[in-house]
Length: 129
Image (tube, rainbow, N blue to C red):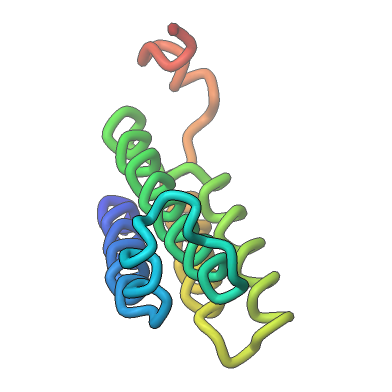
């Protein structure tokens, strides 16, 4: 299970970014030359939607790196996704907040199944710069 969790994160982030490209403000943003073009509320929402997708992608890539280095999923990634999901679900229950919440719970389950004592990780170069 722990091997596909990062790929699930990366896949969800790519889907998020692709869906964001179909957001109605994009033609206007492109027509205005992109730079300093997010001045209206709908364009700011698009900016943050795409930024969230990129952040989710970064989290997936870092989680993939951690799985490759340590053989385990970091629980912190799961807790972060659960927090984001709960926040979104509380404010907009019918929106997409259930996705990071579900991925976060799956991440926590994978982290619990692959937990290792901290002393076994020190020899793998994780404390070195």
